[in-house]
Length: 405
Ligand code: ADP
Ligand code: ASP
Ligand code: MG
Image (cartoon, rainbow, N blue to C red; front, side):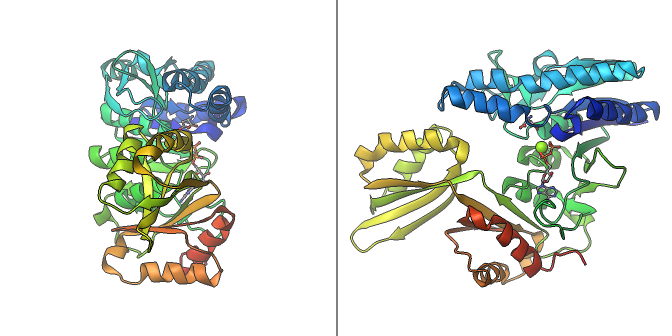
């Protein structure tokens, strides 16, 4: 007998038939004698709608009220799944974040889980009750509802698995595993039987939406066995494992893209010490995450400073920059939201030269212009015009020999 956390994403609970199918899958595990906790997302599309409503009322809305709104989607699906389970004879009850409680910090909209009190859930699971838990949400130190950032149900599931000392955390989604790149963009993408925590972490952080970044980080730190698999088919999925469990290390094991970033250029910034600190310090204070950065030195003692921020952070970033303009004295702020970041990831990069060169050559051959570059030990990213996203990902997938035969 094992203790299992099963997580179902938005498309897996998109309507009542799917919720019934999920209930049947949960029953199978329970009937096999396992203790089961289920984490669910909102029905697909629901969270987008809730976010859009907040933005339509006010682009710079109160993040605490945003959380009160967007956390509601999961409450619906936990209740519905509990009913569906009871209907097929499985004892079940729904749990909202505040009821468990799942304690977080107070960074509304991107809160981090601090602690989960699992004792009551464990007691009930041992007595045969299935716990159906709302993903994506928690409660702040001051008792307000928080959410964990988009895609956060994955993190809820892994954190719950760690807190409950579960044997497995199965992430059921609409693809049957982790692929070399998004299979919706590259039909020749290959399913990976295993991927290392590190590579999965890097892929997630540069845009592979299949797992939320924080969930992989947690799984790695807490040694949670994560498996990604399909809620629609009975196929083996992808196991996320320690690097030494992977025998054949590819130079590049995956490619990801993100259209979630916006490019900001400050034109004619004075070229003197302290300017970068003067720009990025206040942005950090506004909780704006800056990702890629380039700076050029111009001949006339000024420089252009280009960087990217999350699209959702753009209004706050621009407001902060406008406030800084008198002090810092740049000439102009330009923004471009029609950009995409394309990244290649692989642990083999540590010991192989020429990975970046291959990338630049493949993009040049397709006449795709590179706007910004950034690298890490196991990743190279470039920013390109978003219209080239698919073309760039496919070209790179072929260039690194990842296409399925
Ligand atoms: P869920 O609602 O179940 O959480 P998501 O939409 O968040 O599902 O994540 C699954 C999606 O991730 C897939 O439909 C796929 O389009 C996308 N995806 C991006 N990169 C990859 C990848 N490397 N492997 C598998 N899926 C990927
Ligand atoms: N419903 C939330 C979202 O759409 C959380 C999740 O699906 O993981 O971002
Ligand atoms: Mg998801």
